[in-house]
Length: 267
Length: 265
Image 1 (cartoon, each protein chain N blue to C red):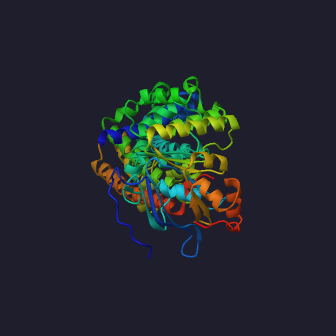
Image 2 (tube, rainbow over the protein chains, first blue to last red):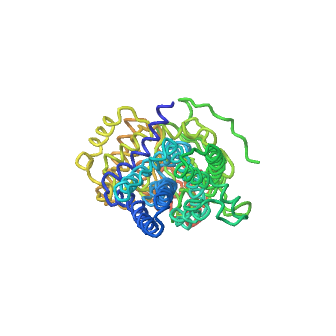
Image 3 (cartoon, chains in turn yellow, blue):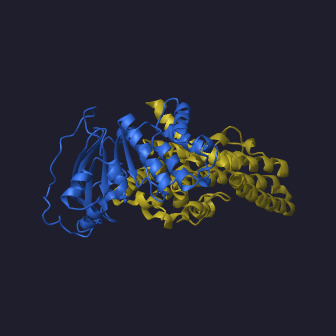
C-alpha cells in the first residue's frame, strides 16, 4: 500500500522533472530571480557599509540573510503553485484527477517538487553571496536548517491557500501564484524587526511564521544566539497554518467536484 | 427521496457499471438539470454507446462515472466499488480517453506513458509500455514529444495511456473525433480486437453513428439528461423504421417519435 502510494507520488514528480530536464529556460528562470535579488541587495549593503563602516558587516549579514531566507518561502510557495498550474496549462489535470492518485498524495508530490525547486533556485544565490560579498549563510550554524524548514512549510501553507483559490475562482486567481507572498513581505519582518512596525500591526506580523524566523535569524547573526522561543512559535504557527490551509484545500477540491469546476478549470 | 440502492461489495460478478437514479443539477435547487434519473447497468465485457446531442448529458455522466463530479442524487458503482466512498480502488482498474484532455506536450511519448504507469502502479512498466507501443504502432514515436504528433498519432498515444493499467472498464469520449476515415477505421478495428481479447467493458460516447453501430452491442439514447430510448443499434433502427442509426439519432434529438407503424420498445 505504502509502496503504491510512494509510486504515485513519484509519478507526478517524474512528470515535472522530465519537463525541466528538457527545458533549460525553465531551469534558468528558477535561478534568475533569487540571484538578481541577492545581487541588488548585495550592492545596497556594500553602499551602506561605505557610509557607516562600524555596522557594515552586521548590516550585510542581516540584509543578505533576509533576502536569501525569504527566497526560500517565496520559491517554496511558487514551486508548489506553479507545478499545479502547469497541469492546468497543459490540460492534463483531468487525467490526473481520474487516476488513482489521492489528493493527499498529490499535495505530497507538489511539496516534494517545491523542495526540489527551492534547492535549485536558492543554492546558486547562496553560493554567489559567498563569492561576491563573502557572506556565508551557513555561518549562523545548524539553526539555519530549522529556519529553512520553517519557511519552506510556510510557503507550502500559503500555496495550499492559493491553490484553493484557483480551484474556487479558476484562471482569475492565477496571478496570486506570483504576487501573494510579495504582499506579505512588509509584515514578515524580513529586513527589520517586528518592533519597527506600528503597534497595531505587530500582532499581524507575529501571526506569520516568517516573522519569528527572521527575528531568530537576526539574533543568530548579531548575538550568535539561538532564539528557541521564536523557533517554537515559527513551527507552531506553521502547524496551524498547514492545518487551516489543508482543510481549505480539501474543502475547495470537494466543492469543485460538486460544481463541476474540474471539468473546465483554467478556461 | 431517491431510491436507496444496496451498497455493492467489490466482486467479479458485479457489473462494470451500475447507475441508479443518477441525477446532476447545477446551481442549487432550481438549477439546470444536466442528468436526470439515469439508471443503467453495463455488464462486464460489453461495449455500450452513450448517444445524444450537445448538452444531452454525456460528458456529465462520464464525469460522474469517473468521480470527477459528485452527483446531486443517485448512486454509481464501477466494478463493484461505490464511487462516492471507494472511488480510488475503482479508478485503479478503470481508464479514460478523450481528445479534449491532453497529455503534457513537451514530454516524450515514453515519458508520458511512464508517468501514468507510475500513477496506476503498473508492474513491469517498461515491458508494458513496450508491448503497447508494439501493439499500437508507437515504437517509432516513443522518443518524440507528444506535442509534435499528428492527430492520429495522438489518438494512438491516448489509447496507450488509457490501456496502461490493463483496465477492466474503459470510458471513451469521442475516440475518433478529428481523425481521417482511414485512421478512424484503424482505431475502431483495434478497439474491437482489444475488447474481444481482453474482456474489458467499454462505454463509448460518440457523435459518429457508424462507429457506434459497429462497436456497440447496446445504445443509450440521451436527451435532456434522460434515457429516452435504448437497445441494440439494429433494434433501434427497426423500431424507428429508419435505415441507419444517424436517422434514429435525428428523430430523437429533434423530439420526433417512433415512426408510424413501427413497434415501440
